Image (cartoon, rainbow, N blue to C red):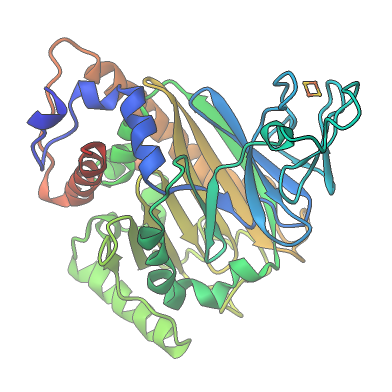
Length: 397
Ligand code: FES
Ligand SMILES: [Fe+2]
């Protein structure tokens, strides 16, 4: 099946799923999620991620701006940053021969062994660090690989998110990265996202998660019991002045926002229902049994609770390999071992994502079959259709 054979309401063809050049083209024409201000909470903090054959590093500049540099020295291409997270200074120094760059703009400041005048010479601009476009919206960071990113599209994110995210003030700081987990997964990144966009697999595969949430919350279905839970939550949210109406990939086709009640007895996204962190965040002075959830095309799902923020996102490395990132962000004054326990904080997403990884590896293997043909999505899998429509729209120049 070629991309011209795509049929809305069905999955993507194998030639689309595994086409790395097409994925690169889509990510050069679209904004994708690459973390939050909480991942690089303090000036000089760095956060490195992989995409295709490259590495990129978010740097929280001393001027407060978050930039994204290609993790490659302009001299002999050594990595400048090692490890997922770290610290840099006003100057970024390559560990190989100590070429030195300004962290504010990537400009080359010092080039060991090069002739006098090299740094200030006419070609100096060719020897700075490469950057890709980033935009911060409500404390969340989006990047684009292209030279001419669609600014008008991302300009719409802020006004949509603001009624939900402003009370948390993630863009204003006050948070810290409590924990981060990443793994390279032998699965196709788009199938990971398709899996994320429906919860029809949840009852059979996420026994733990389903104790926290009624699966109907993720699919838009409504049972009387769930409606009653939701109505009680609306009363609490409205008393706090919090927006709760769902924005279902409209008016912008890359953003979905919804507030969900958790089941009675669950104060946070933890298996035992106990708070994940004693210190509440944003508009909450006491723990609230709910999440503010956001889904971003093409690659992220994010959950704000009353005591932490959990981000999950995926990026392709190859056709059958991707990297899955999860961060847990808490109040900057929260103390590990006092206000939160790392295992307790991380458990739900570590377990749930591991369950999904198994499914996504299985789906990837099946999509490689000579018998593969895209299957139809059920009505409750409407957001899978939305994702595939989104991708095919951007894959067609
Ligand atoms: S490779 Fe970076 S200074 Fe030589
Ligand atoms: Fe899942």
